[in-house]
Image (cartoon, helix red, strand yellow):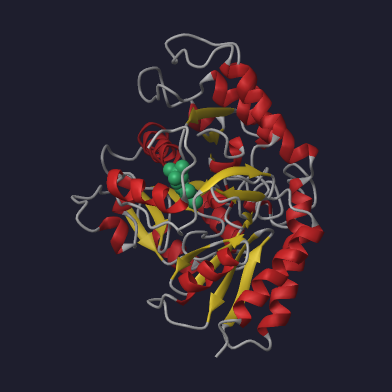
Length: 426
Ligand SMILES: *Cc1c(COP(=O)(O)O)cnc(C)c1O
């Protein structure tokens, strides 16, 4: 069909099925427009977006400030590669390092690339600064982790789907239970070859699992005592999603990081992606101080698109929005309402078992098995009722709307969610 004709949902889905690799199993809605907390399908039906592209669209769909920055830069200069300097990258590097409080940034494009960058940086630091013998460095990771899809990253995944038949796997990783400080202590002190500890402050893909209150602070202290780098993957939890700029910020009420807060943990390496661009463009970043970042010399790592002028302009606009519109505070306030209201419903529900989360990264656990398709069926019904969410497992639904939502919209959404869940009560 001609691209000028309007396409139905069925036609668009058929095209993807026929010509696209089947590496995803999307909900059968075909979207063609987004604005703020809303998206529309090709038939014109309006939905609340409760996934936000896995927390990339924290600033809301097509935020005018971000779009303007992107269009203006796209009309001026899009890509030089790092073979030459450009007039946006340095400005952005100063901006983002001040914003998060690190000496330096290494710009990449996707979350997985940023994780790879952090792993390489950690290994190089281990050989050149810590003095580990070549090829012997080990990095500790957690059960249930999600850090992306590269060959190395899936090497230390527990998800059989993500791993099986993609071997041989990259060596040099030790897996321990998440939120188990004793396990971390015993591994970290067992060998001189431990280079880093890679952790998600909240495990998003696994189903929004939050560690004990003091886990991250204790983990950081163990890392420090043993000269091991604490590497925080905040690709999903960062950029105001959990009610503070970073999830390692704890419950701080300041807009930027606040080291006075008892629960604040400074990562040695911070990994960001997703919402750093408000979902407008692939932008990711690895932040660290000079003693770590300076081990990378010219020619040792790179990316053709990493740090391009459009990415730089978009990321600055997107981070401006986070500050200007108080998205951390809003996420914190609305998250409390969400958990309180859903929690009240759960007291008398036989279909929803539990609500958990922080800020506007929440999950509802459904009263069925992990292998069931109940969560999927509920998401289909939610879509019918005008709200888009996606299961992370057979019995867990993640609820993560754009952080520009207001209280009235949230209350409307809560009533849609409760109404839908009630249709599944036994
Ligand atoms: C999404 C995600 C990634 C991977 O990001 P991509 O841009 O999809 O490569 C890595 N870590 C975490 C915690 C994520 O949620």
